[in-house]
Image 1 (tube, rainbow, N blue to C red):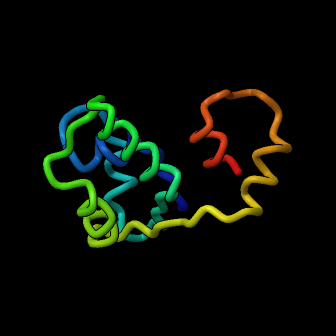
Image 2 (image 1 turned 30 degrees about the vertical axis):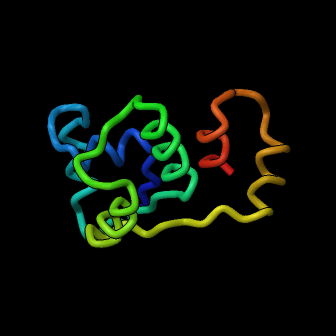
Length: 102
């Protein structure tokens, strides 16, 4: 199975606790699954950290290495993704979620 984590799922996974369902946590911990995190999610987390909306238990730059150490593959944002965003219907207005869809 392939999983694309959004920023909240990544943070909830890293913090532990009960914000994720048991099924989601199990899927994210299954090394047989391909687990992806978009650069868009790191961008969104950076904004939330800078605004004081979330606090991390480690410096923000450590987030990339932590994710990679846990086996998450980081997906880049390319110009072609912006073309896809421009063509998406307006089912969702959140710019980061739209980038994930693209």
